[in-house]
Amino acid sequence: MIYGIGTDICDIRRIRASLERHGDRFAEKVLTTNELAVWRLRSSRWPERGVKYLATRFSAKEAFSKAVGLGMTMPMTWRSCEIANLPSGQPTIVLYGALRDWFEARGLTAHITMTDESEYAASFCVVERKGE
Image (cartoon, rainbow, N blue to C red):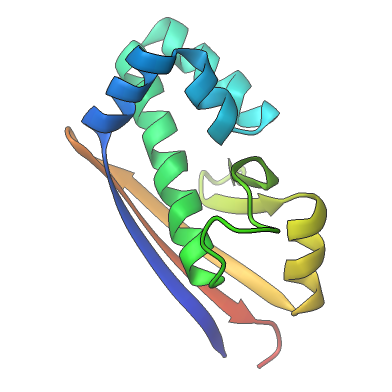
């Protein structure tokens, strides 16, 4: 049974401008430790891929927060939600701390997809109750 659906479209130019204004602090606020390592690697090799990586993660976390109905209120925080990839390349959501506990207590599972183009990153998230 569907618990919630969330979508988000992110203007990559706004992410780039935030990075220019705030430097790494913006990425450090939004990304988990694992995501930061990938972002730094991509940014050092291909700066534009680093910007798009940050934009897709930002967008995916926004879509997830909408799908669970919390927005950016506790227990949902930027760093308690990680967008990782399975060995196949499929994106997946990894949760930490109070958000993980909240999510598991409700018997939920999430599916996420992301894309980026020249100016926009977009994400779509479906959250379901397990076994219904």
